[in-house]
Image (cartoon, rainbow, N blue to C red; front, top):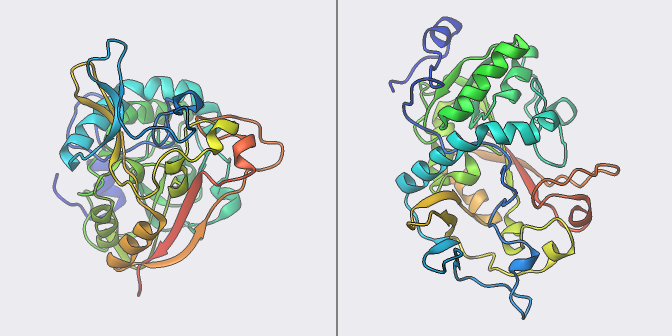
Length: 327
């Protein structure tokens, strides 16, 4: 897909038809819909010693791995996640759509909203790129605040959901099917870029994603993204006390991978330590302004995969990185 300058006319002309036509892709969506979060084990997955196991689990026949930690290249991760979200988009929206809102910007399962946090600053009159938009709920909210918005995602299924929400809400935002590490925008054409649990957790080369967003940003532009907190890589995906037992190495950077019965990867999440994230941001030429670790709010009782009020009292499950391009 050729790069484009961001203007209203060009956005309208290039609005993606991916609900009907698959093109290229961005490793994306937000907030894992199957409750597996970062790495799939719940409390029952712990070994007898309480430390859990690093070896892949097996399916019911015991023949092939059902999930595990593996090295996987960008192409394999992209294909697996694109297929996963193409098939899961409707059920994901059915389960979480009410919480996310059709025209709202939710950063995380803790319920932190951009209307409260204002991490992007004033968006009125700004060109804003959403990377890994899913149903484009955030982009619709941004458009309502006066931004010129471009929403991208890998999954045709997610973009079909976004198109349906455009029609339902009457707030239509341009949708592009695009790879997060080859964004379809010209260099220095975007004022703000954002991703709410979009591409970042699903891209195996997140350093390349940081460089690509930095390329798209104008000097002085801001890049803000939320993702799974690096520490929860150590913990089972359980929102209760079982999720407070360390069972896996924080330093294991192999991707969590689910497999089909034939051993093909069907879903992946990649892991970076907190230090990795900081180094990737700096290496891309960006400045790290803040890291937010949302606390679980009092009275918020919704459980979402590993996120919930019990575990949320003790450890963060979300990290939000606020960065800017110098200039």
